[in-house]
Amino acid sequence: MSISVVILAAGQGTRMKSTKPKVLHEISGKAMLFHAIDVSKEITDDITVVLSHQYERVESAIKESYQGIKFHKQDTELYPGTGGAMKGLSYQNDKVLILNGDMPLITPQSLESLIDGDGDIHMSVIEMDDPTGYGRVVIKDSRVLEIVEQKDCTSKQLNIATVNAGIYLIKKEMLDKYIPALDNNNAQSEYYLTDIIKMAVDDGKIIKPVFVKEEEFKGVNSKLDLAKAEEIMQRRIRESLMMAGVTMRLPETIYIDIRARFEGESILESGVSILGHSHIINSHIKSNSVVEDATVRDSDIGPMARIRPASDIADTHIGNFVEVKKSTLRGVKAGHLSYLGDATIDRGSNIGAGVITCNYDGKSKYQTTIGKNVFVGSDSQLVAPVDIADDVLIAAGTTVSKDVAKGELAISRVPLKRVAGFFDKFFGK
Image (tube, rainbow, N blue to C red):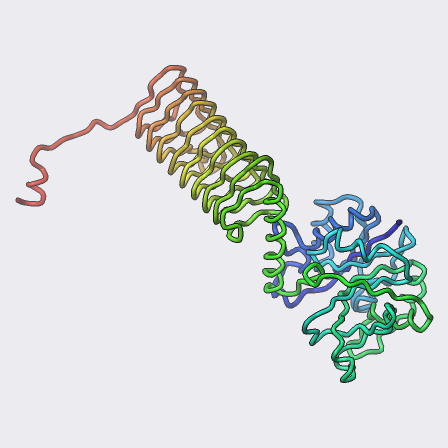
């Protein structure tokens, strides 16, 4: 079926209480609007996003991540409302799917029933236990007759449990006919997309109700809604990964970015955060560790370790309170309390407690290179740029500011001074 998609994303989102456009607020690492775009791209390549509030900012964000998206700027002063958003649009295909940019939980599977089948208009409806506050959808003989706002409902209509979910599949010819006919003669002086339902019914058109799950068509209008949507998305991500073979301890405490990838049989302990485009392969990420935009392969991380962006770690043990940033580690042991930034460390090397690569001089970042089978003693500082060759031993407490050649011992210590009887002299007997 040839379908065009229109995503409505022009609203100000005042209830978000934010200077950031509502549709750019993130759910599991991705702007909520991008979730809608991703779903749309699985259906068609004819996608139009309707924008208005902070148009340039939202358009720029979309262009950074996607190609081929079309944009339509809604004149909200002249044509406010959801119906006004559709004015002036054109479509490549005979049917048009209208989505909302603040519905990040929709999946391709949840749209299948809406797309399939006959009917002039397919309208998503939700059956709610408590529909209070929502417009009721009046259905008879499997056809929508009308949408009645709650304030206009009769006592009988108030008992209707079906409400409008706000997603539609509409034939192009009907949009071309009804959108120009919309008016704003209502209390809000807005052009309502829902008004075309009444026009179509009056013309004898078939309006097919498609029942959908409330969770999947949940809109996000506030920071509270954002948090609730995040919980749902995180549950989906974790369940999918566990079904694919990832072990999780206390999964409800684990946060995983939707862009992260997993391979093999990895283990995630409680409190772990996997952020950005991280790639975890056959690794054990221990409790309260953070991995961000990094690759971890056949390694164990933590507990309470931090792997920062552009790090590539393989066959390595990273212990507690170790931070790795923009570094490549192969077959390394760094057990505790170290900072390894802008470093390349080769196999068999051991990083002692309290070791720091001093990679920043206040202006620029510099590289530290450590070869194979290097032992770096505790509390050593490696002042970059520095190159430490294979088979080197660096004594504890050493500051390395020059390259060290293969097989050497590097040691720098202030001579130890001992004063006999000082304890009794200082404290008294």
